[in-house]
Each structure stands twice: as structure tokens, then as C-alpha cells.
Image (cartoon, rainbow, N blue to C red):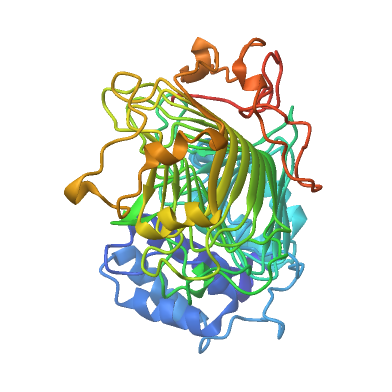
Length: 554
């Protein structure tokens, strides 16, 4: 018990109580949030917090501040190691990450039997005697009934295990030079205002399996979950983009951790495989949103495959520049665009399913180069083969299959496009329209069916003030025989293709999607055997989307 009553243990206990007091009782305009690890290890930060607490309007915070002022001894944490790490803390662990006070945990019921002071002293005792490593973390996990609340910064190499539920509480940053590994079958829940941001120079390894996918979802109770309950997953890298000093949407421009882009086309942000991201995306301010999955400046060394983004409040997946490739992607129920790109993305995609819902959404694709400087280089030029884009002919929303504009190029082949209420494709801007004549923007080997208000509205008239592409005639371009694009031909998708809870995207064995496909390029990335239109081979009873995807409404 000497450790519990030591000055150091007393100081740590009071710091923990101060942090909790600010989290639960701090008034608006005071300290917004306290990072406990920084409070322990940063003398200046700790002194500033203590000084502010002494003048707080909250009596409890003032009292704690006064006690800490007496104990802190001129801002020096007692027995603080010169390395900046508390005694007994393994250097590869960040105590900020193990800081867990769960919402739906057994700790709450336990606290009714134990005074909070005893729990705080126990915490201080364990820290003071130097077991704030894996032993302490496991003990606290048990106390919290398997739930771990995470906030602040991840420093070093961290692993999130499948026998815990990991709860994102606020913006969680994987810092430069650090890595986060997530085990197959792990559940990660996001509280309001939270997101996982993998900064430039950091790495995420989210590798699930078909029978044990990794799931990022809302922290709200099942049945009450909604799009935008939390922020989503953000990966930032050092591959080329066409905007200087870029900072990702959703993070303050003054925070350097939001910056991305560089010169390394082959760089890697990590790996995301057999991973679902649900009920994410929120608007922080006008035109400043987080998406389900955001990829900023990620290089071709990044692996993104077998990923589903479901019920995102903004875009499903948004790509800002870089050279990242994607394969076997499912985007369902996006509130804005399903796949959005900008800032010079030059990646590849094969096997893409997009399902839009009748009451939400805009474009299946919204492709830009650079809205402010359309001629900026590198130019956006994704190459996409084998995609199925489906939407009910909604009476509520104007859904467009593809909008390509602002000098974006690209190659799009082997598509099935079914049921959009707006139009098939809109080429926006004279710059992108011109690229169709140079071959830098190409479309071919597609089926369009049941589009527009009567199912025959392939392209909308753009006369006078509606002409946004210098007179480019989409109808003339897309109906040219050499494009091998069919209109008003039924791809024979099942009726369940637009089912919101149990969709089926596989065309019938007799589908015309078996014909007129273009062989994908010869490269190790592409599956050249995909000699059909759409994301799923006609007639398959079990396809790559089965076993790991899910479509909950709430």
C-alpha cells in the first residue's frame, strides 16, 4: 500500500480525477478535452491545465487544481523519467490509448459498489508501481467487460484484438511512424464526433477474413443507428496530388496531422481487407465533411480490397489524389456520392458494386480533377473495370449514374448501369469534354437500362444556361457504335438488386452481360478472366460479395 499513499500516486490520482472532472463537468469555453498521457508526461501542458483549473468556474475543478498546485512542485511530476515515459511503462505503449472508461461496461455497476475514490486510487497504485503496460491494460479490460474506449494519439505499434470491443471517443490519430494492427473479427464502434485518422507516415493493417470481417460501426444501440453517427476512417499518405499544402476535409487546417500528399507513387498507407465501415460520415461545417472511407494521397502500395462502406452520411469512399488501387468494393446507401474523386487520383478499380437508396444519394460516381484549377497535374485518371451501379428510379431524389467534370479523365469499361432516376452520364466542363476526343476520357462496353423518369431518359438536355460542357453532345458520343454501349437492354439483374436489406447483384445466366466485354489490361492487379459486364459473373449463386457484407438499416 505504500505505492498508493506515495506522493507520486496521489498526484497521478488527482490528475486522473481532474481529467474526469473536465470531461464530465467542464463548462463551455474552458478546456475542451484533456489528453491524459500528455498530462502525465508534458510539464508545460500539465502546468497550464493546473493553472486554468485553479480559476475554473466549477468548484470541484478548482479544488482539484489547488491540490495539484501544491503537489506538482513547480510543474515536475515526481520521479518522472528523463525519457518522458512514466516508470514501468513500456516504450511501445501509449497510456492514452489504454485510457478506457466504457459506456456500457461492468465498471458502471461495479462503481455502485465501490466508491469512485477507491477505483481512482487503484488506478494510481497500478501506475505508480509500474504496471501500466499489458498487465494493467488487461486488468482494466476485464473490469470494463471487454470494452475499451480509445481517444487521443496512437504512438508506436498497437494491436486491437478481437476479444475486445474498441470504442472511438473523439478523433483518434495514428501518429507518424506508428502503426495500428486490427485482428480479424474485431468490432470497432464510433461515438459521435469520433473518427480514426491514419496520418501521413503511419500505417493501418485492418485485415479481416471472409468469415471474420473487421467492422467499424456506430456506437449507438442497434436499431437506433443512423448515417453520420460517427466520422469514419481516414488514411493519409505521401503519393502525388495536384494541390499544394493540402489538408484533408474534416480536420482543422491548422492541424498538421491532416496534411497529405508527396512524391512517392509507390508509398503505402497500409492494408484494408474484409472490412466494413457503417453509419459513418458527418458534416463538420459547410463543404467540410468526413466520409465512410477517405483516402488522401495514398500510394499504389496501399491495399484496399473486399471493403464495404454502408449508410454513410456523405460520400461512401472519397479519394483525394494518389495512386491507390481498389478491388472488390461494395458501397451501399451513401447519402451523397458513392465514389468521389478529386486532386489527381490515378488508381485502378476492379469489381465495384454501388447500390443507391431511393430516399438519399446523388451520383454513383462524382469525378473531378481540381475544382479550382482544372488543368492541374497530375490529372485525375482512374481506370475502372467491372462495375455494377444500381439505383431504383426514385421519385424523391435525382440520381445520376456518373458525373465526370473539371478536367478529370479516366477509363471506364464493362459496366452494368440500372435504374437511375436522373441520367446516365453527365460530362461537366469543356475540359473533360475535350478529353473524350484525345482518349484521356473513355467509356465502353456497357449496358444502360431503365434510367430517367420513364426509364428512357439517358441524357438530359443542356441548352442555353444549362450547357456546362461547351456544347458537348453526350448522346452522340455514347451511342456511337465503337463505344459498344447498349441502351434499353435488360441486364437481367434480379429484383433484389435494389433490396435494402438483402440485395443480390448477380445477373441471370442468360444475361446479355456475358457479351461484349473488354478484356482487362495484362497486369498482376487485373483479373483478366473477367470477360463479362458488371461486377459479378452472370449466373453465380455465390460470389465475392457473400459472407462478409451486411446491410443493416439501423
